[in-house]
Length: 294
Image 1 (cartoon, rainbow, N blue to C red):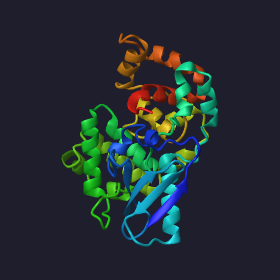
Image 2: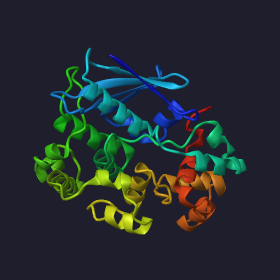
Image 3: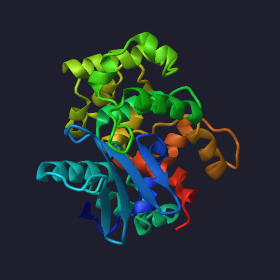
Image 4: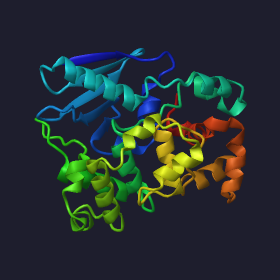
């Protein structure tokens, strides 16, 4: 079954898919030859389904792994895909700002700036915790084990990202011994229990209007979320006044803007502070400009 969604004029499928490493983590699978993204979605039915997403100039084409879907299921798929690709995000103010900056003029013309995300903030939060203080290889292994061991299975054999309830129902030892999460084991257990019980609702962060400092304080109340992780979540929910500087950004910035010489975070902040509430997105576009040849 095929579903079609129209995309904004300034939408760039390739730059959105490859905007950061989420495309490479299950339950996403990316085929660079066909430029298709496979994603497993839990749509509330008996089994989750896998969808394959490709793009034309002004549309996303979604091929579902089942022959028929209820209208309710189609609407859920459309909502999830729009959220994943940020099709409803208004970046016009950001693009207008970029057009006046010589080193950023490419951003608007190439449709950069939409950062791929998961259907839920919960999934983005778990994956973000998996990125802290470790290599990308270890991040990939932890996420893969979470999906393969705790995710519900589609009819095609792929797995969905685990629900909070599924993650809450296993022990800390499971996270240590099977997921190989190390010190994160207790964080995953506590986070899942808080979300499953309703004590914590990460999805509410999408519409949270607290000032940034207060919002970040709320996010950092989740154990395992420090300053970098909190500002990364800030980006995932569509707020860009945090830079989320990490061990990859520092040398990348140094190579591009400081002749490869070491620089401190204050220098990086000063470089982007003129962009105000868009500074985090300006930084990310700048750091990833060469990831795709437009």
